[in-house]
Length: 352
Image (tube, rainbow, N blue to C red):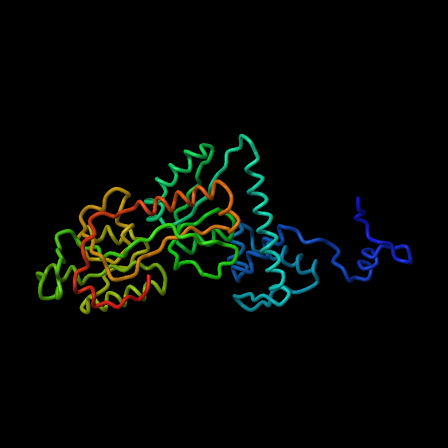
C-alpha cells in the first residue's frame, strides 16, 4: 500500500513540513462547511442574504469566510458597499466548489438509499397555485411506490423558493420558468406543466364575440371591465401586465394591487373588477372557482418547472416524483375556459 507520508528531502524533513515552515502552504485544510458558505455568498452577492439562506448570523458567516481566505492565502471577493464580486481566485474556487459539493450531495443521496428502515423526507417549496393542483396526484403516485416518504411543503413566492434552494433547506422547487435565471449553476430545470393565461371576469359579464366592449356592454358592466386588478409578481411581470391592460382596455384603471392570485380572484368574485391570471390559479383541481368566467387571453402560456440540484434528478425518489409531477401536469384540463373575445387581440404578446 502506498505511503501517504511526504517524501523526505536531503535535510531529513518532508517536503510538506518544509513548505509549511516557509509559509508557502496553507496551515489548515478547507472544510465542506466553509465551501458551502463560500458557495452561498457567491450566489447571494451579499453576506446578509447568504446568512439568511444558511440560517447563520452574519458575524459567524463573515468569520468562516475570513478563515477560508486565510487558509488559501488569497482574497475571494472584492467588497463594495452592498455588493461582493468574485476575484479571479474566487471564480476559480467557485468552479471547483460546484463540483465538490455536487459530488458530496450525490454521494449522500445515493448512500441514503441503502439505509434500511429510515423514513425519508422530501422538502418542497413552490407557488401555491401550482402546489394545490399538481401535488395531490403526484404525491399519490410517489407514496404508492415509496410508502416511507413524507413531504415537508413550503408555499412561497419565487424569490423565497430560490432562497430555500440555495440555502439547501428544500430539495425541490416548483415555480414559473421565467422566475429562474438560466444561469442558475448547479440546478436543473424540468418542465412539468403549461398553464394558459386567462382573463377572469365576474360571471354575469358575457364577453363572447365582443369587439368593442365600451359600446357593446352596459355602462355598469363596462365600468367593471375597466376596473383592473394587478397582481404584483415582480417588476418585469407587473410592467407586462400593465402593458397588456393598456392595449386591450384603453380606458382602464388599476383599482388594486395584490400579492397573491387568490386575493385578486376573490375581488373578481365580489364583482369589483377583472384580472389577468394563469388558469391554474382559478382551478382547485376539479372545478373552476365559482362566480367568475374565464376567457383565453393572448399572453403566452406560463411554463411551470421543477428546479432541483442536477444530481437529484438521477436518484430515487426524486426521479419518480418528477415523473409523477409531469404526469399530473399532462392530466390537468381546466374546465370552462371560453374562446378569446375579439377585442383581446388588440394586445401584442409581450411574454409569459
